[in-house]
Amino acid sequence: MSENDVVIVSAVRTPFGKFDGILKTTPSFDLGIEALKEVTKRINLDPKDADEVYYGTCIPAEYAILTNVPARQITLGAGFPEENISLTIDRACCSSMTALRLGYRAIKSGDADVVIASGAENMGNVPLIASAEKARWGNRLGPIALEDVLFELGYGRRGFAPVATDAGHVSLEYGVSREKQDEWAIRSHKKWFDAYKDGKFKIGEELMAIEVPQRKGAPIIMEKDESPRENLSPEKIAALKPVYGSPTVTAANAPGMNSGASAMVIMSRKKAESMGLKPMATIEACQAAAGTPKYMACVPAQAIGKMLDKTGLTIDNMDLIEINEAFAAVTLVSLKMLAEDNPAKWQELQDRTNVNGGAIAIGHPVGASGARITMTLMYELMRRGGGRGVAAICGGLSQGEAIMITV
Image 1 (spheres, helix red, strand yellow):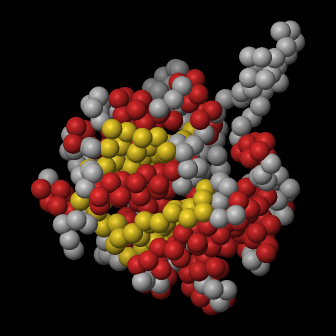
Image 2: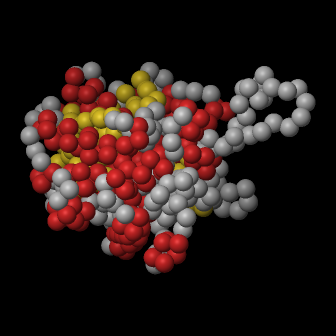
C-alpha cells in the first residue's frame, strides 16, 4: 500500500427502473442529484471538499429541454458549491467508468485529492423529437413526423448497423450460439434473485432508497431493481424473434432500456487517512480501448487484455470478473476471447463472471452502468473477505473501459 494509491471510499446506486416502470417520467437529472447527495452523505463528505465531479450521461434527447452542461446542473442541484469543477462525459455505456478513469488520472497526477465519478440515465423519459429540417425549417402547414432516438439507438442514421445486429453477427463468428445466449440470460436473472434472497442487494450497501412522488397519494419508496424476472420459461425465450435483423439478439438476452443513477467517491489513500475514512477498495489500474465499430462485443476483452499486459497480471489472477451484459453476446464473446478459445477455460471464466447477475436482469441505464458494475464487483469482493477483480464495459461503435480493483 502507498499513500498515493487511489481508493474508493463511498459507492452507491439507485435501484434501476424498467422502461415503463416507476421512474418512467423521473428526469435523469433528479436521479443523478439523489445519487450525489447519498454518496457524500454516507461518509459525511462536505461537497466543498470534492475537487471535481465527473458525470456520465449519453442520451442528450432525454434532457434536451434542459439544454446542456448536465454535470453543472446536477452538482448545483445537489447543493455543491458554485466553485466546484464538473464535467459531463458521453462515451456511450462506458461513460461512468470513463469518469472513474479520469478521476483516477486526476488524483494520480496531483491535480485533485477528491473526485466523484457518477452517471445517470432515464431511457423511459426520452421524448420523441422533430428534426430541425422537418420542424424549425420545415413546411409551414401540415403534420410533423416525430422520430424515436431509441430506435436502433440512432446509429443507422449515420450508416452504422444497430449494435444488436452487430453483436449477433459477431457472436456467431466466435461460435456463441443463440441457445448459449438465452441460457446466459436466464442465468443472469437467477443469479440476481439468489443474491437478493441472500441480502446482497440491500439498502445501505450498493443500493439506496429513492422516493418517487405521485400525482395522487403518497410517494412510492423504491428499494429494489424492477427488471429481474423469476422463473423464466426457456421455451418462451427461445420462441422470441431477434430484434433489428440480428441473428441472435432478442428482447430476452439483452437488457432493457432502463433508468437509474450511480456515484462513487475516490481519493488518494493519504487523503482518506487524513479524513479518517476507511478505503473500501484500491483502484490498481484503468484502461480504455476502441476497435472496429462492428466488433463492439470484443472490446471488453480488448480493454482487459491491454490492462493485464500493462500490469503484468493475467486473467487467472482475477478472483471475480464483471463484464457488462450489453447483450449476453458481449459477455460471452469477450470471455471466450480471454479464454483464448479454450472450452474448459471459457467455462471457468463464466463461473467467476457476474456472479450476482448482470445488466440483463439488473438493468442498463447506460450512463450509470460503468460505475454500477464496478461497485457490484467491489461489494462482492468485500463480502468474500477481499481479493482482486476486473470490470469491463463496451460502448456503442466499439469503445471500451476496464478497471481493476483490490479489496
